[in-house]
Image (cartoon, rainbow, N blue to C red; front, side):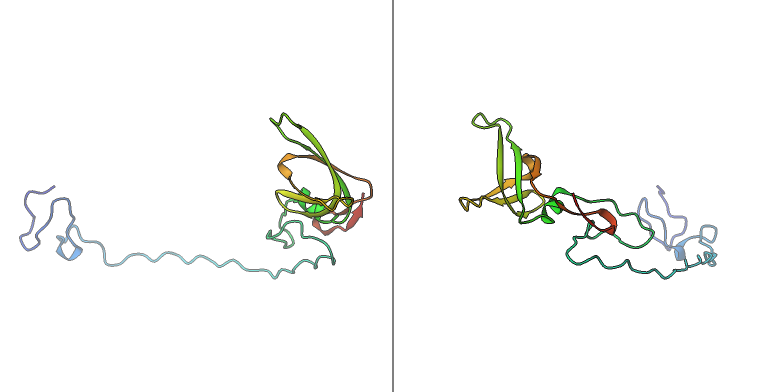
Length: 159
């Protein structure tokens, strides 16, 4: 930028600004900077925790805030509904795309476990267990009423 420094005591590299002590009085920063106004702290009102869930029920939204006045979306996933009905006989209707041998298949058995991406059933006649992927699941039927905990802790019902 400058070919020659404006004062001889401060060597300067090209493109670098001089330090404040080395600046001429016309370029120095003011010594007094105005202090910012303090921001008022928000007052916190005491909150009460929600009532505990009834025994045997499954939390609908694990990890989601459950304080009064906060919105919690319904999370009644198939896996949660199946977990409420373990031990019941279920008929699962599955389809497998691009399978020339069998495109659709029906599995019937006792519901043993359910995860986010799988369902485990067992055939009581043979004792054979099936690990089925929910990716291929179309729907499930039951021959008896289902246990189902409604969202937001409103109780249990059978359908």
